Image (cartoon, rainbow, N blue to C red):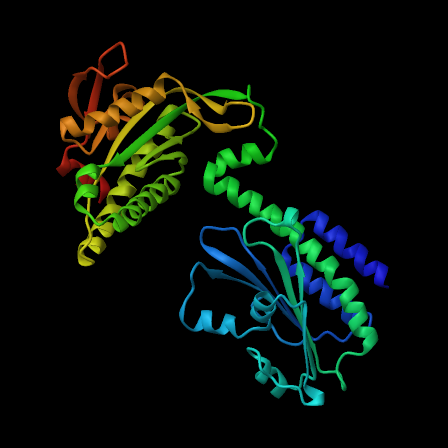
Length: 404
C-alpha cells in the first residue's frame, strides 16, 4: 500500500497536479490505508511579486479554503498569527519536528491548537523538510507540513513511521509543481505573457526571430526629470511603479503585450488579424489609460504626492520579434526601423506639447470614424529617420468625447 502511495505522489508531481490536489490526495490515501489523518496543512514559500508564501489545507469532514496566498510584508494580525504557528517555530529554531499529544496533556501552545484540542483532536505533528543549497531558489528552501488526528491515543508509532516515510515524497512532488510555477512566474513577470510562452515552449534559439506587423506603443512620463529633482528620493520608485501599473494594466486591458520597461518608459505591441484591429486596440489602450490617470492623479493629489502625465507615441510597421543577444544573455523583444521610429515620435511629445502623437501609418490603418478625430500636426523630421513623418494627435475636446 505504501508503494502505491509513493507511486501516486511521484506520478502526480511529474504530471503537474496542483499543490492543493496533491495534499488532498495524499491525505485521502493515508486515511484509506488506516493512517488516521483527519486534518492537514502545508506551507511553501513563493517567488512572486505579490505574495511570499502559499498555504494549503485539507480536512476530512469540513470544507476549507484549500489554498491561500499571503502578501509581501503582510502585517497586523496575519503576521502575528504566522509567528505563533508551529511552522514559524520550525523555521526559526531549525528543528525538523514538533509534536503535541493532547490526549497526554501536552500544551496547545501554537496557533489554532487550542481550537483543535477543543474540537476533539488528540495528536498534532508538524514537520520541516529543508532543501539543499542546489535545490533552493530565493526563500523557497523548505516544505512545512502538519497533520492531526482525533484517534484515541493519537498517532501510533506505525502511523508516525508511515507519515515520516511518505511526507518527503509529498514534499518532493509539491516542490516539483511549485518550481514549475516559479519558472512561469519569472518568465511572465520579466518577459511578458506572450514572450514567456515562446520561451517556455523552448523557443530560445538566438537566431529565432519572426517578422510581424504590429502596432507599436512607446510611452514615458512627462516632466519626470524635474519632478525627480524636486521630490524626496524615496518617492521616486513608488511614483514610477504607480504610473507603470496604470500603463501596463491599460495595455493589457486593450489586448496588448508589454515587452520592455526602460526606467520610466514602456515599449508594447498590439497584434491583430489586420492592421486596423491592431491600431484600434492600441488607441483603445490610450483611452483606458486616460481614465486610469484621472483616478491615479486624484489619489496622489489627496496624498500630497507629485503627479504627472504620460507621453505616448503610436506607430504601425514591420518588426522582428524574437531572441536578440549573445550566447548566454538573450532578450526576447522587437527590433527594426519601426521601433526606432515610435521612440522618436514619442520624443517629440515634449517639443510639440502633446500627450499623444501617432504616425501616418497608424492613422491610415484606423477606420474612417476613428481616423476622423485625428488632427494633423504636419510633417516632422525624426532623429535618425531619413524621411519626414506626418504626425497626428487627438484634440483635447474630441479626445474627451472619444473616451466618454
